[in-house]
Length: 487
Image (tube, rainbow, N blue to C red; front, side, top):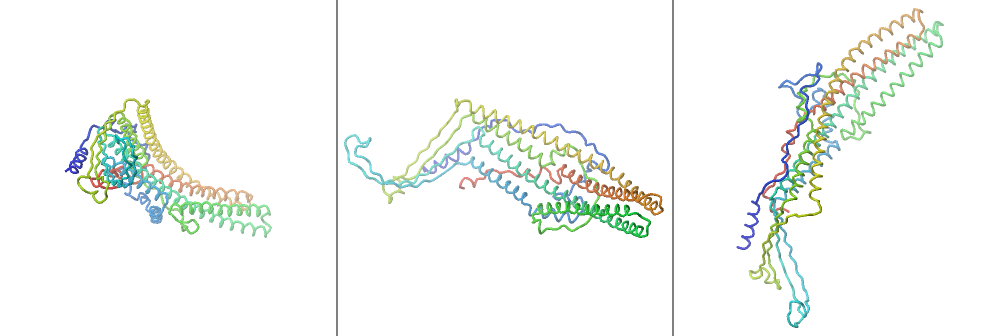
């Protein structure tokens, strides 16, 4: 009956719930524009529009890129580390939830002691005593959450868990975007290599023409030297472009979890064009960007810690129950006469401690205010990145249009220069200049195509990819009854 009474006391104390002190969390307001500066073809999202869920890169409709992205998701070590941090945060949240339950322990012990014949409890002179003692004591401690300290700690742990989850998704977004950007940069260099190699072919034909004319006494040795110099310089550019390509190939290898030495990306010139991306409205960014979600959950975490610091000003009640058996003979230890027990409670009210609690509360409030500033800064940076992407795509599209015209003009100028040279009207220097101008303009046009694709990748990243805040809502730990009997 005594054990039943003890168990009932602990169970009843578990029902003691008091108020929760400290501020309840409410997301602070942020300044949000009503619309983006949206030049065509980038547009607001219609209700049916969306970026592919879970695989935002599929908007580019490139099967090879999708295959590399899948390798990244399966093998990237930075992403593995981020997932392990999430599991760590989940385990720490379960640690916090243990505060809702009594803490119990058992400490069996045995000792043999010799006591003095003049020990204090002996009134008259006695005899020395040698005695064995055997004990099996049980201890149960429980601190009822009278003022919400445990609940605020649990609130903080769950907010930190959700923040870590959002951070993991942000690592996912950053890595997949970096892979897509490196992939399109590599493809642009494939196209640029093709352009330079075509120029090498053209210049080799030009060199053959000049050699024939030189052998015929029509062209000078200077014409021949100038054309040979141009050809050698253009071949050098081929090697430099290939060197840049290898660096991107190595970067893709690391991102996909492969050794650079054994990884190869087949050559395939860029032929993908940017496509319209559904933007949504600016306020959507607050729910679509995982880095903003990380900052927002950090605010909730710091707000809960303000509550924890506030609870330190209030009384702390600790209930203690002990029971077990004690005997000088191990053979009769587990018998009713040897049973022992005690019940007690301790109410601790802080009075003064040198201002420690006030300082802790002030520090918690300032840390919360800092997290609010960080959150608002994250939102502002997000709006900036979207506007940078929109402006960049618009300007690059216009630049690509005028550069197309420049390539056509340069090609026509080379044709005219060749005809005038063959006709003896001008020197070969005009042909050399025209060839160099055409190559420069063709390379710039190719580079603009690559920049457009990379800029669109970063625009999709700035919009949060395919992520939304609902993906972390279920990342919470709740106390479970089974924990009452778990270690």
